[in-house]
Structures are given as structure tokens and as C-alpha cells.
Length: 600
Image 1: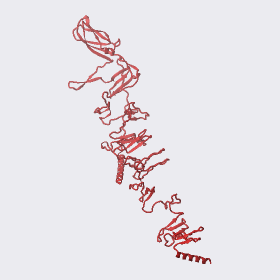
Image 2 (image 1 turned 45 degrees about the vertical axis):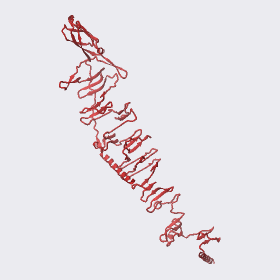
Image 3 (image 1 turned 90 degrees about the vertical axis):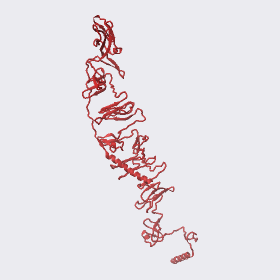
Image 4 (image 1 turned 135 degrees about the vertical axis):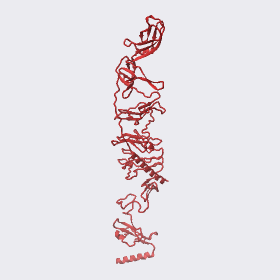
């Protein structure tokens, strides 16, 4: 009976379908909604769609587009055919689907689940209805632009005061890390305007920028400025502002200590500098360093140039040797100040070379030196060479200047054996005059075993006698007593009985004719007297005396000297390194030409 009712109901429905364009299935007899071909209404049941497995679903022959089923396995859920009967495309509805949600996804497999496209189209990411980022189909990623260099993998664009890329790290990691295992650069930056090609900052104990290379022709960090007066790299330490030359340099470094270099090898050099690089006359491609290493090695028309600005008492170059811990400079400043067991050492390598040439008094540039060379040549308007001995008054051996050859030595402006000397030498004292043919000849000075002053004059007898008064200045500077008598020599210039000398003193002497004569003849005279001892006031206020009353006093020998040979430190010419620098520059130029062509 139940079977019959069901059949009758189905027949009734079919009749209803054929009689009406719309169908309503309900228990209250209401008509279907006008917009629906079929309306099912119930408060106690639902619609049960055909249920099948994935295999059964795929076994449906020519499924109609829009066909709906419930899949019971392999991600169960509603699936509909979004394709065609000939080429089905089953799409899941709700539940567990392949759609990416805005709240995150779980259970994904990076090999099969991804965000992107499966054809040759790029992926664009928007915000505020504006494209911000694009992953192009050729693998290039662009940010804030759709154009990029053909050699770029990631290209960002910024305008105004914005930064192209900003990286920040607060831990032990690197804010920015770049690595290249080929011939390219780990980081390459170019600034065409007034901006900075690359800016790195670290507020902790790390480095703002750290570059590392593992190739003899590569550079850990490379900077280049194409402007004729630009600076390649600017660096500032100790929280100082960057200072640079307006004419440009390779590096401009500022800090409590501008540049620090350490040569770690046993024969390493701390800093190597090359000037006049394009001048073949000085070997522009060569870098000269010392085989044994040094703090700095500089090559150029001027190896080292130093200048002090903003300090009227500054020192241009300060050098300290022999592991001395303290440098000595002048309070008024100088071009160079050097401290060591020997403050300054120089060697003229030419057979006619001069080691040191000095020009004083802000000379106009003209200086003199012997054509056959010398240890030093000094030129000044009033004093060419100045020497000063600072020993105190109780020091009995000092000299302002000392000169010596193989056999002859001379002390100039010194003190020995409680006596001050102008020149004290084992050579003859002499002068040079011209002979009748204008050739220079030598005239020798008379010398004595005592320190003597002489004077000459003309006198005349008046009725057989006269008094000769000595010059007051001479009187002050001679010593006349029993032990140091004055010697007087008289030569008559006329006929008389002869004369004798009496009443000799520092004031003068009397000349009297023999046998009571009364002649009025003239005569010439000469006196010789011992130089008086003298006291000198030193710069420190103390006094010292100079005893000139000695006869054949002891003399000093040559000053003790040490004969040392100058050490020739071999140089090594590093032309290969210069060539590598040139090759690197060519690489940079080539890359910049490519970029310029792209910009055009």
C-alpha cells in the first residue's frame, strides 16, 4: 500500500512539473518564490545530495557543468564541476578547500600549495588599490615600480626623502648581509644625486657595514664617485661629523683618530698610499713598500703631505721611533716633530746628494746646497745654521757646534776647562785673500800659548819723554799684574839716544829717552797683554767665569762618536696589486655604462 502511495505522489509531482513552470516542495502548501524554479521549504529536514568517493566522482561520465556531489574521502566536502562535460574541473565548496584564507592557513605543503600563478603571468600585490610589489614571471621582484634593470633580482624604487631599502638588526646578527661567490659584488650602490649609495647603521656593538671577499681580485668593500671632485667613501667615528675635501678624495675619514691601519703580517704595512697614479714618470702603476713592513708606505711625487688647519701651534707630522711611548713637539708648532734615539735620519742616495735641505725665514724658494752633496744644507736670511748647548754652569764641556773630518775637528761656541772658546780646533786658524792674479790664497793667524790681546799705535817724544794711554775698552778687558805683565814693544822712527818703557799698567805706559835726552822723535808701539777673566750670566740666572790666564792649558780631543752604517731596507714593488685595482675599476666602469644605457 505504501509503495502505491509513493508512486502516486511521484506521478502527481510529474504532473505538477508539467503543469507549472515553478515547483514548491513543502508541507504547508505555499507557492514557490517567484524568482525560483524550485523552492524546498522545511523546518525539520534538508536536501541530501548524492554521496560518493573521489574515485566514484571521477567515474561520472560527461558530468554536466555545475553538477554537484558530496565527496566522502580525500578532503570531504561539496564539489561542483566548474569545467565542461568533456573536461571536468571539480572545485570544492567551503569546508576544507585549497583556497588561501585571510586569517592564515594550516597543513600546507610548499611543494603543492603556493600563492601565485601557474601560467606566464606576473603576481601583483596591492594596498590602497595601488600596486606595491610585483613578482614578475621572469623571476625579478620589483617594489614600488614595475621596471627593473635586467641584471636585478630585487629592484626597489623610492622618491623624495624615502629610503630604497632600510635594514635594522638589534641582536648579534647582521642588518644587511650580501654574498657573492662569483666575480660580482656582494653589495653595489650608486648615487647619482646628492644622496648616499648605501647607508648602514648599528646602535649596538656590531658594525654598521661589514664586507668580506674571498678572491685576490675582489674587495671586501668598494666605493666609487664619478664626480671630478667627489669622494669615494666617507667614514666618521667617535660620534664625529664627516669632514672631506671639496676637491674630492678616495676616502674621507673623521674621528678622534682619522685613519687607523694595522699590518698583521710580520712584514706587513699599516697604510699604503699612492699619489700621482697616472704619472708614468714616477711609476704610477707601482706601489713601494718596505720588505720588513712599516706603519705606512706612501708613493708619489710627494710621498707624504701633512698640513695642520685651525691650529696656529699645530704639528704637521709627528714621528716616534725606538718604541718610545711619548712624542715630543714644540709649543709653537712645526711641520714635523720626530722622537727617538735618533730623532731624524736621512740618506741621500745620489753620489752628489744632500740629506737635509733647510730654508728659513719664509724664503722665496731659493735654497743653496753644494753640488758635490752634503749631510745637510741650510739657508736663512740671517742665520743659516744655529746651534745652542743648554748644559748648566757647572758643566765644563759643552759646545754649540761641532765639525769634524777624518783628522781635523773644531768646536764652535763652547766651553772647556773653565774657559769659553769661540773656535777651538786642532787645525790652523786662517783667512783667505786674493793674490795678484785674483786667485784665493791663505793667510794664517798668529797663535800663542796664552790668551792675549794686542794693540798698536804711534807716539812722539816731547823733550825726551811721553805717556801713552791705552784705549779704555782695552783697559777693561786685560789683566796686568806681577804674574801677567804687559809686554810693550817700541820702534823709533827718528834719531835719538834710545828709549825705555816704564810705569806699565792697565792705563798705559811711559816712554823715556836714555841718558836724559830731549829728542822729539816719533815712534810706533805694540802692546801684548793677557785677556782678563770674565763672568757670564746664564739664561737661568746663574753665573760662570772664564779663566783666560792659563798657559798651554789641556785641550779636548775629538768628541766621542759612533760610526753606524745606514741600513738599506729593501722595497717591494707591488705592480700586480695596482693592476688588480685597475681591473676592478674597469669592471665598475663597465657596469655603470650598462646602467646608464638602461636609464636612457
